[in-house]
Length: 182
Image 1 (cartoon, one colour):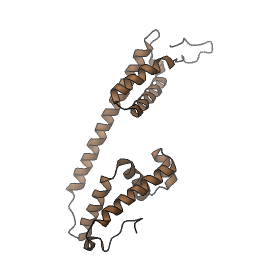
Image 2 (cartoon, one colour; image 1 turned 180 degrees about the horizontal axis):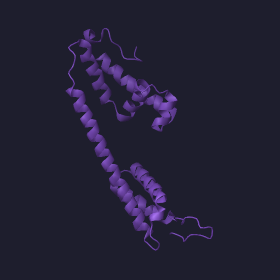
Image 3 (cartoon, one colour; image 1 turned 30 degrees about the vertical axis):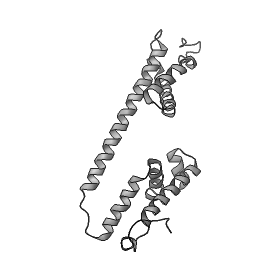
Image 4 (cartoon, helix red, strand yellow; image 1 turned 90 degrees about the vertical axis):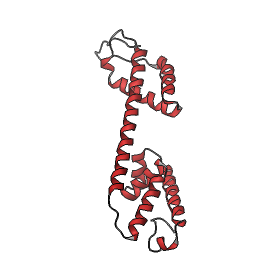
């Protein structure tokens, strides 16, 4: 429920507690995932608060909030689709580059392929620390995860890369080693 401006002339106040059930149900039907639905509702409520001045007096608050949930969901889909297209294009550009004839370029391609096969959260954590040079605490803050979670992800990523390394023939890996490996 929206209240008229109070005596002090401040912005109208939203009373959305009664709408949360509808918002969550709709978000859950859109995302088909409880955690994503909660994130979607949160994002929509932030948008609603930021744009509260656009709500028409006497309008249907529930319908307005549901439309914001819907638009936030569509924006997220578009964003993910756009990101996927950029990643795919980057892959084409990386593959289009001419490989040097040296043996180490083949090895580098193997390491790159193994890195890209890591789960997203492990790849992201390892990238922030190993490539961007962030400290563990800076990388944890950038990822929005606790320090222990980040360290665990990096440990699992390095273990997966070591496992890949162990499967290679000795002549390929004789002069190369993965950082953090044995």
